[in-house]
Image 1 (cartoon, chains in turn green, cyan):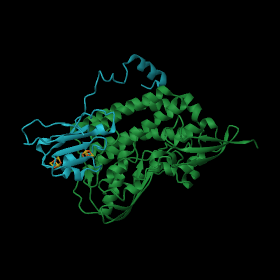
Image 2: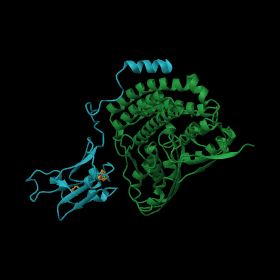
Image 3: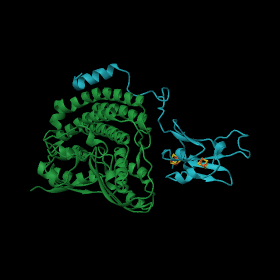
Image 4: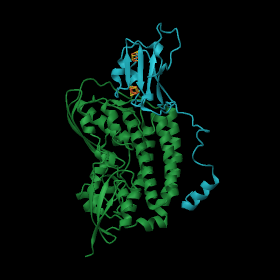
Amino acid sequence: MGTRTVIPFGPQHPVLPEPVHLDLVMEDEKIVEAIPSLGYVHRGLEKLAAKKDFNDMVFVSERICGICSFIHSMAYSTAIENIMKVEVPERAQYLRVMWAEMSRVHSHLLWLGLAADALGYESLFMHSWRVREKVLDVIEETSGGRVIFGTCKIGGVRRDVDAATLDKTLKMFDDIEVECQEIVHVFAGDPSVHKRVAGVGILSKDDAYALGAVGPVLRASGVTWDARKLGYAAYGKLEWEPVVETGCDVPARVLVRAKEIFQSIGLIRQAIKKMPKGPVEVRVTGNPNGETIMRVEQPRGELVYHIQANGTKNLARFRVRTPTFANIPPLVKMLPGCELADVPIIVLSIDPCISCTER
Amino acid sequence: MKLGMPGMVLRSAAKKPATRRFPAEIRPAYSATRGHVAMDIAKCNFCTLCQLRCPTGAIVVNKQEKTWQIDRMRCILCTACVGACTRKCPTMETSYAPPVGERRESLVRFTQAAVPGTSPAGEAGRA
Ligand code: SF4
Ligand code: SF4
């Protein structure tokens, strides 16, 4: 047995802009143990719920994450609607799907760019983000914001999108799809990308299941589970199948996310085509009283909201479990046995969003 | 189409940059864009409805002094005030508010003229 060295990874690290710290116990170049520590950016949002009006909390929940912003507000609104037994108009359900999938496309493109950057592919990183910029333009045109949509509310959505804009959105996504195909082609087919990541960061199917991995990490290990199959919003009325890969390594996770981009574009098309006419919101009066658990699928995996309301305008309990939190135990399992040089791309392969994790 | 990385690089070399030459070239705003909250103070009756609805407490209305103040740094552009006002005084504009160098510069106060409508209303000064 060689001498053991502990190398700190993070909280400030060039490849990872977010503050997660890992103590890497090394034997020569091999990792034998990884000990994570979190808590650098705790924001105390769960306490804030006790002071804010439950309607205003939609805005707070949207700001838990800067990437999956819309999905957070959708999860929160749906949870409160479930407690208050509010029937959301159908058009609003389809609009929610449309916006949620737009944020998935932009999140996955962002991640592909970051992954390219971690592998040293600067131009591929630029290209991914160039395409992502177009998605952000569509988001701005339909919702009014580029990152914070600000369109979800309890009882529906705050703005309708007219037919002309929806048509334009469809056209824009035709272009975006072609450009994504090119980028994905490089990720999937380039021999040097393949050589760099093949067999790195293995997480077996059993481990993924036992450790409670979520989202693309779980699906890349061969487990068929996608929370969208629960059928919230209009997902139950659309036709799609979860993307599953069996590689269990980093390239499998890249492929799951890459394929999900096209799946999301397909869902956006379906949602726009099936969208019925009608109102987009209902008036909600009174305060919620009850308890609920809401699970939705974010780009990074399954998000869980637990809300307890006691009939006042402030919530009694507001608990959020974000996907990165669930993916940290699998990450700690993936690292032992790996080379030090592979740590950045392995950490990145779970698409960590540390600020969400710490709420 | 599927030329891989070399194809993409060659095509990019022949094309003009994907970025704009800001500020020489400015993308027109979308009509949906939430830029900043503008205020028509002449129509305001200082009912404070907007202040009550604002989730961030960005608006401070003073009935005695006839002033309406917004803290642009607090404002999250949610449009709640625009929807709340029965007289349609606050409106959402598509242009962004100018950048500020200091925190206090983000407070913008509108003051209503003594006889409403006699003098042009506007950004009367920064508090
Ligand atoms: S802006 Fe409108 S809501 Fe606000 S105080 Fe004036 S009249 Fe009332
Ligand atoms: S847009 Fe929203 S945050 Fe901004 S002043 Fe109006 S109510 Fe307040």
